[in-house]
Image (tube, rainbow over all chains, first blue to last red; front, side):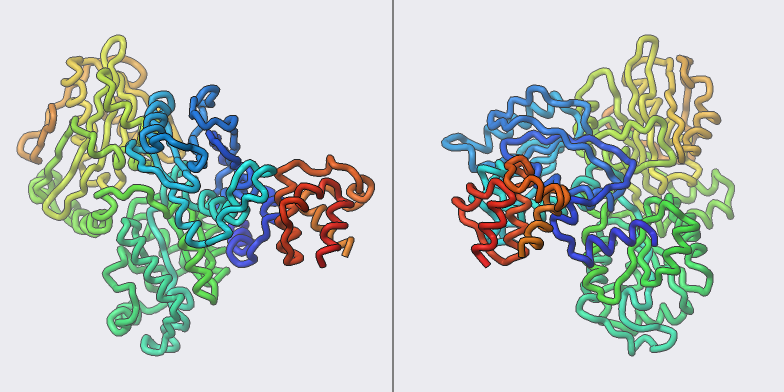
Length: 530
Length: 72
């Protein structure tokens, strides 16, 4: 059986004991290092976390500080990918805890530029530092009541936290938080219909006779919630398309409506053909797609065509399917950006743009769209979106820097670095922030340290204006004319490589004069902070 | 009963039962964190609860077997 389906069954249906989780042998090869800075024990959380991380295809090596209430941050491994601050707040007496912790975290941010996850136990504190994620343990307290703490064991375990609390946090960190911090988010959820979103078969039972159980309703509500968060929601179903349209018009009790779906593939082709259509239309990679189907044969067939696609085997009991979906790695968004909300509308507008692009000349097309490009050096309000785009862009990215929130913030503070954010809108939609260039002052000119552009804006015939326009803004601000471009060739950044060959070849690895002017009258250009 | 307890000790410590029997009076079979796992596993499996003094005393497999057997 497919390993991830076996793991799904083990984690979500078999209700594994701590000992079973403790003895689990992880298989993932995607290695990360997480440093735990603490004043009480984390080991009981780590003991059971590896199966959950394996489900997220992550292998984490945890390293530990001594127990340090003073948060000196001495002997810290600064090469790690994430620091977890694991703090028992009840250990601090007679001090202003908010002021103390915020001051120490600010210091940590100066010496460590990647991700920080603060996990307070016993009491929360008011975090006033940007770009630090704070985990709220109070929900575990409401979940477990008296079992939240176990002071009998403290002298052996080094923590007042009960093993039940450790287990709940271990599962949540392993499935949700650590993957959300260390890996790019998923972009698209493709669902089957029959016996997945409801009980029954549309073509046999008819729309009115399908059963929406309370758990199917919750599953649909969860999918709708994810759609509102910016995930593309699509259907791949072996049904007649007219029946599917009718289904959503007659079933008022379904939380999901026809308009919640970005694309509906209802036909009698194999599911991998439908998924191929979805991937091509949305311009996304297979590894950012989650496919949910109740038929193991369909899952096998799709996995054999798309080995990197993520899958959930929908259970007859929709409560299990909903539980898996609610904890599926890559679906937790720790900060929502404005762009998440506009993604679906933008994708639908892309369909119209493609039709126009094939019926006009490029010039007519751009003029007709009323394209407006804005280049901004004022990026402080967009740190979250910039970090998000840096981490999830795979196709049009030059050097895979994968900046964290703190690293973006540090770049914006650096006088020798110019970060230019590009915003795009046209008469069909406002795409928001779609691209970023990071240009650093070098010895003999400027170095293009990184460039990434959202796949949603590619293919509109504007790549040149977006990238070269942004570079031009940065060079002017740095008052230099020579540019060197760096490139790291990855698995899927062929569009970026081709772009460099077409427009920046003479700058590849060496300084050369850079020149660029926008074509007159084709598009409106706004310069912000220049 | 004894075999059931030995099986739980073996699962928690990842030491085989034969080895545990050979070291039935040893206080080096587990470290403090594995001991926590063992305590909770015994409590869950036999639906019992240990107080602090019992937790303090169960330092060897023999003492664990004695304490658990006395509670069932």
